[in-house]
Structure formats: structure tokens, C-alpha cells
Length: 329
Image 1: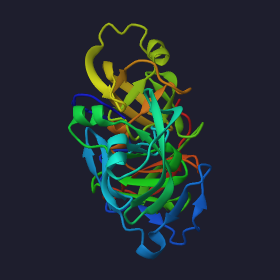
Image 2 (image 1 turned 135 degrees about the vertical axis):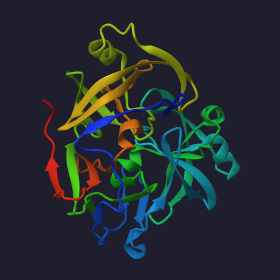
Image 3 (image 1 turned 60 degrees about the horizontal axis):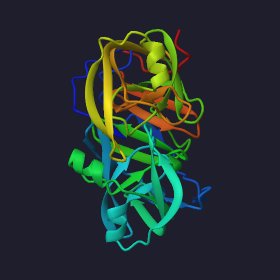
């Protein structure tokens, strides 16, 4: 997650946006049994008996927070596949009586790295969606919580979200977390499937320059580029505006921004897209694709199935349909 002062986002998405839905997905009800992850986290999906009741969320600084329960205590949880670990805030972990041990390792966000502790015996309940029992990462989020004036008790991170399907409906502020492959677009809506490469990344173009962008639900902007990709896309950035922000771990960000760009991926064209840079990024991606774009559409993000699906209701007189996107040309 990175946060910065809010700004006007005027995007024209050719053929895809101005979306509003009641529910643009169909869900298979026969969920698989609980599974063991590589981290020996036990995940139990609860939708089989509860009919996949959607979970309400709120947006703050453009990103998604929801209310969950951790070891029996209500908690405010951030949805952020761009953060490498499902993680508790250190202060929250101490308040609920967890013992924290140092690991000498780091957790990675889309924009940086931060020291990672660990606590055993953590139970996370995402209401109507799943229960998770695991050893959990511990990070001090107090600095960024104070800066954005909003609590972050925990982050549901990429280690978990990379194993399942996420469906998000911004107009209704609801989401669902279901087993991979168990949610598809309804037959009566328009949908476009965008292939994922290298986990949760897509191939795209900015002003005709090819870039590989990581889907990052914890980024409030449209696109944030690495230093190398920024120099390639904007060899002359003398017209860039400057602002400041904060990383999830609390460090300051110096942000450069250029507006009015063309973002293209898999047959989707976004005109007027703002593109940002806030320094080097960990990982091999050229940049991040955030909620400034993803939050304008109803989406299914199914990382194990290697697909991102954008959905919208058919307009009066339109025939619904689906398409599989190709690399932008």
C-alpha cells in the first residue's frame, strides 16, 4: 500500500467502464475441503453452508478495508495482495496477547521492504468467507496508521490472496473470497478476461511503451512505475508534478506524476491515465496497477487461474458477451 493526497482521476476507458452491477458473477457452491498452504496455514471456506454471503468493505485513501475477527477480537483489515505476507500490526498483536519473535527476515510491499516478526497460533475470521489458522507475520504499522488517520490492525496479503479468487464490486462495496475457479462472470454481462503472467502481473503499454505491471490492490493510484521503467516511458519528465506520500511501513515517499497518458492492456484502452513514480521497487515488475484503475470496474482476480476479469452490465439494446484479451497492439 502507498498513500498520497487525493487527486482528480478523469479516466475514459474505451469499451469497458462506467460500470454498475447488482452481481456480475456466478459462483459454484461445491467448495473444496480445507487445504494446507506451504506455510502450513489451514484455510476453511465457510461459503458452502452460508451461500457465499458477500462481505461489506469501506474505502479509505482509495484502498479496501473490511472488518474481521482475529483471535476473537474485532479487527480492521486491509486487502493488499501487493504485500507479501498476511500480517498483524505489532501493537494489535501485543494487545491480544500474542508473543512476537524476531525472524531477521523482511516482508515486501509493492514499493519497499520492512522488518518482519512472527507470531504463532493466530486465527483470522473473514466473515462469510473463510477462516484461517496460521503463524502470522508481524509488522509495525503504527506510523502509516497515524499518517492516514485510519487503523491498520492486519493485512490480508499475497501469500493468502495468491491462492484463491477475489471478486470485488465497487459500486456496492462488497467482495467475496472463494476457492480458485469457483467464480465466473454471469452470462448476461459483458466481461473481458486479461491473462496474468508471472503470478499477478499483466503485460501492458503506456504511451506505446511495453511494461509489465503487478496487480496491486493496496495501491491507491492508477499506475506507479519503477525508476527504470519511468525513465524508459518518460525520458523527458520535466513536466512531472511532485507530491509526497507514505509507504505501508511508514517511510516517506517523494512522488512524481505525469497525467494524460494512454494505458493499454489486452484490448482495454484507458485515456488520460495518471502515471506515478516514487523510487525503486523490489521484484522484477516494471510497475504496479492499482485501485485508481481497478476500483472503477467490477473484477474477478483469480491468481492461481492466471486471470483478471473486468465486468459490466449490458446496456439497453446491447448483447452481453465475453472475450479473452490479447496483448495490446
